Length: 206
Image (cartoon, rainbow, N blue to C red; front, side, top):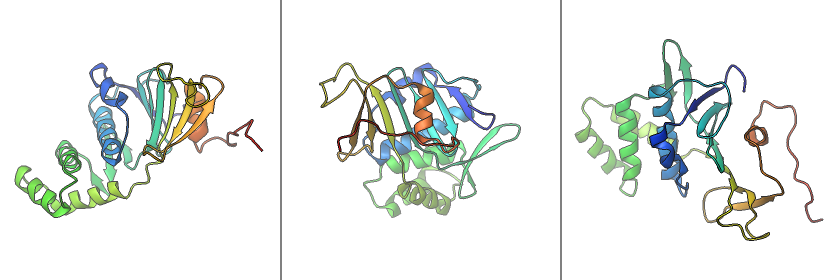
């Protein structure tokens, strides 16, 4: 970690939220909104990555649980003055906007027009155009999802190795087996742009 990274503990009562599998865009957005709320309301910084922590680094979110780490694109800009603030398209994310976006994605099977109509009825003095802009930005987000698992429960030889990476969160996900347990630091290194070299896959069939 360097001085520009932000790392906090995940509140104990929210660990189950971050432990749930990410299966679709709605799950991904939910994690991003929970992350923003945690940094706003539970933002006691820590200096070292450990279990049950989250890290914001170089435009990505990293979540570290006991036997699982995952990372997705973090689309929000961060400003730190007297307090931490998050923005997307120059729109500040306050509690009302976060609640409205969460409502929108819980009801995303409806048309955006209907969703915005309901939001306008439910939330006083909210800018419908800003909410629509955020919804579209989140729908178009390239999540860049990567997960590491140490999964003794589902281990099955070379088909489902004890230690592995999963790329993408849909049914088209790609699994890459690992020979050893991956450290939190090396998981960041696989993805981070701040290192001078990339990581290599080895022992691939020719």
